[in-house]
Length: 336
Image (cartoon, rainbow, N blue to C red; front, side, top):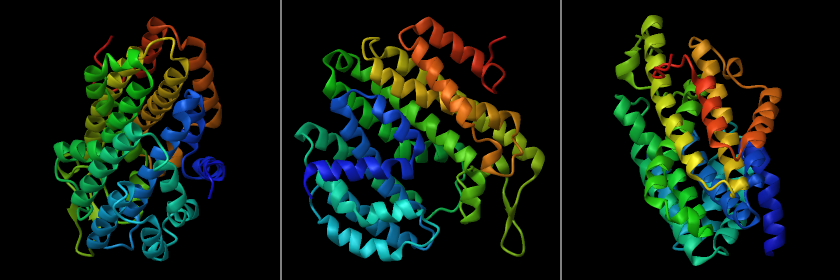
């Protein structure tokens, strides 16, 4: 397949696997759109392997290793697609199954990137895949520190990837790389924590929870199901919301460090951060929610987020003030 048709497929599949990134990626400067979109889809393939409940821990580990080798051009993508696709069940979204089946198209775009970009992408997927393989045998995390470690492997590394791609694109951004790399990990962790909290019931339906047992004291019933004290659940949720707020505060610092002239990158970051903050606010208001739809932000809120972010994208003081207003009252936020 020629590159134009491959990019056409990449752009077509993206909205079906992530409406958020399908919205934010086109805000980036043209030279970054294709490589960031491709990087996201690589991560989504790894996520699909991790999330498929029909795969054993051993199968997941093998496929994750194989996928890392595919990205590094040590294994052929056709073999991975032919072996993995038939094993995916209806638990996996149809679009994700299609993505796995078309892994060769996505990898073709990857391998057409510059050597510098490929190196960045390979490092990310290698770290992500090895981390996912380490955690895939666990149905429950024991501690908050374990959760933080997990969030690094599945999302913090994506923050590092984006930062290195931004630095490769802009010498001005590259001068702040050391500080940005540290903050980018927190940015990624914060987004992942929001997703974990929002999707807690979806994960539970497939027999998995990423909520640390030390906060929720999850106990096993005689019939094999799990239960938790609802009072402790609220306390545990507040602790996790506070941790997430801390991460998103660092995500704000990261966004404000991007030069104001890089309007596209700032939009990409601020739209993502804004939607995460609004979701976290809804979770905080309803910590005992029973369905993800209860805390999902509306399309009107998404539209408002993008409009406001675009209006103040170049004004750090206004961005900081809005963040403070939106996060007031969240656990961990001590402002009066």
